Length: 211
Image (cartoon, rainbow, N blue to C red; front, side, top):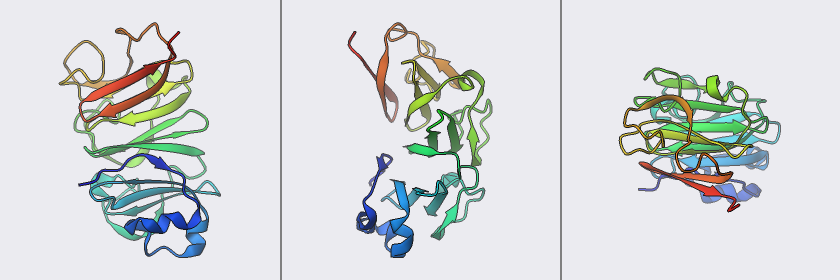
């Protein structure tokens, strides 16, 4: 059971190697700049086009296509909340939920939210991408990562913020309760400059610049 969430930049027809894109016409594929394939068996996808529009395609579990509804679609549909936002990357957690970030350093979240993984302060699911502000409103996000039910972001200042499920300490807060809003990870890595992040289902990894 494949769950694919990494960003893939494809050269035109390479998209046809994925079954999810098999029905797309060549003209549409030529305009795709970034594609993120995720979900069970790679049956969901988000695409950033060369004109900066964003489209969703596939089964749409928990509203992870960001279309504002739960209906599956065999044809690409625009994701209005992300169009013209200069989205440059995505991360997927198999809860499932999705994060996206822009060239401006903004971060958006949507999908399942039973453990506060969307940082809205509630456990209400969202079928529309919501910009995460609060503690992140004056931060420039340069990387995002998702566990099954938690979310992590990296700022241009080398800081790590995390939120969501925390039963295994995956948000690095030093406490067990779920984290409903982004909190800077200070324990052990607080004084270091972080250059990379990654998540397992219930774990988080940070890479320092070794200085």
